[in-house]
Image (cartoon, rainbow, N blue to C red):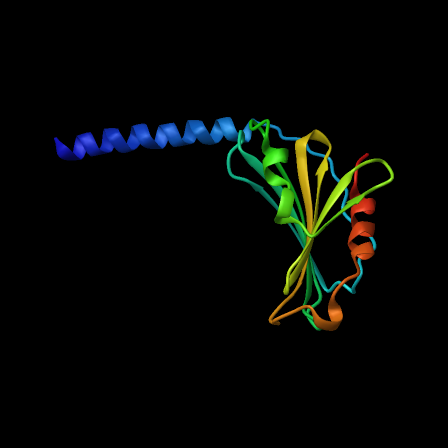
Length: 163
């Protein structure tokens, strides 16, 4: 009796999993975004990851650029929450959580943050996306001579921003 019950339970679970898999494969998700073409350092490796853990949750598109010799590393992250209407407001830095604010000619506000090991710039993108460029050096205690000018980060934003 136990073997039969276990077989029936596993068959039902397996059938449920297969149905869930069929539902997921039939969902089409369309997003359109640009990636930068001119970077402030030579790139040896580029990788793009699409992170969608739940269809109704956060969708993230992460492109990383790496220079093995210098250790320079840049991440471009686009994040969008499918159901949270305050995601952009909640995700962008507020009050004392940024070092400087810049404004593009089209009115887009950029939030710049600088730490000892990273430089980041955030902005709201169309369709309720939050976009971020984060620059760092691998295996070091600070940016040192490789620190980017803020204008170099802003240039990256201009390359990818949808106005």
